[in-house]
Image 1 (cartoon, rainbow, N blue to C red):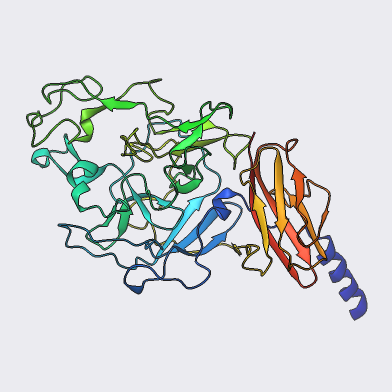
Image 2: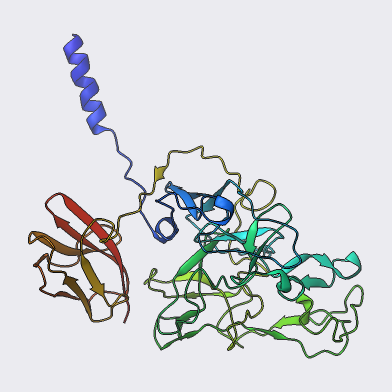
Length: 412
């Protein structure tokens, strides 16, 4: 009788549906995870410490301190401190069909290295009336360090605009990488993208649709209505641009909408996604509204902003994202180029590599998209990627007792 019960239990166990592991998508894999214990400012662990994910959310644990050198901050008495953040970001972003949600003071999203994103405002307004709100880039700009960041009163290091030490903002030859995520779950790219939202055209700087208003007095708001209270005179002390209400949105003037984003094709999202872009001008200076804002495109999940933001508790089953070693870290002396690739991806093994290595390309679902190539010492090999859809792939190299994977981007 006991054996029969055990057999029945075993059948039920085998027949029970098993949950497939959540898919690794760019919101999981785009973070700069500290795998070496490296430290940044004042000996604080740098970048992102851990990424955990479920089907619906990503949890990012970080200190708020980057790996690049920060400081000094002229005139700013604050110092960057370990914030011990755990951010919860939705993996299923949804457009907001109701009234748009304003990006708040404090963090509005996080850069890919775990540093906070702040919007264009500082905490001050003219006569404390909340009508004419100061532009942090103008008012606080003198206290920015060479990476264009500074710490808040609580020690939270942040960038109000293009984080130029995070990626190469002078490289206009390729689509910028994902450099962060807003709290509505949509990605944030650097300054460069495809000229056309459908993924065609040359790579160029993506343009904001905001401009400086042509006004001589601060008596009206950007929507043309009379301001509840007038602002200060426009002069050398408080020139145009000193307040964010000195800017106006003109639909179609640039590439982006009123949230500083657009629906478009990108290397990581070949089927298209809504995406924000940081915006700069021809002098590589920030262009208003600089980062996502002044309102979000998507729905903001409860708790994503406000006092509890950054203090998320993981109360659901999650998987810890494991950063795959690069070829060099795995001891494989291989060079791959170009990356991104449009026609051919070259693999150049050095003379000392083993002669049992096999290379193969996989898509983001883990499915092979190429035949296996045998790699031989000092003999270049190549994959023809011209027939692959634009997007992210993974080049996996296997040998006796060794395996490593490298991210490859295909563009056309």
